Amino acid sequence: MLQNLNPPTICLILLGMAQLMPFTLLTDRLRAFAEGPLIGRVVDALGAAIFATTMLVAALFFAGPAQPPI
Image (cartoon, rainbow, N blue to C red; front, side, top):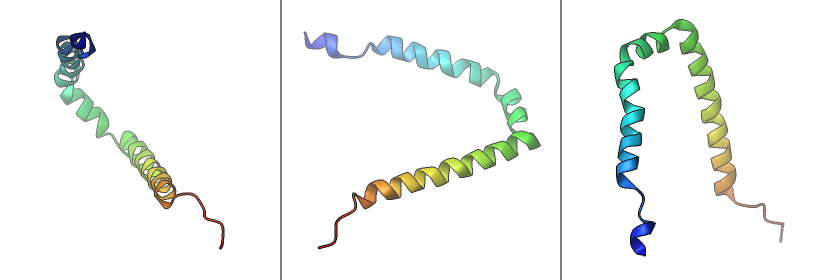
């Protein structure tokens, strides 16, 4: 019964290899595309926006709920 709770390891390994192989084969083309000036600006802008949003959410989460004055 406990054996059915384990994930199908062979299937996960095959899925990982199936996702990795196309990117491995297309590394040079993807790198050339990513180093273009337009793509670089878009990635920089999105990266900064995502970072700022993530830090805001983290700060609000760790600050906890507002406490009423005593």
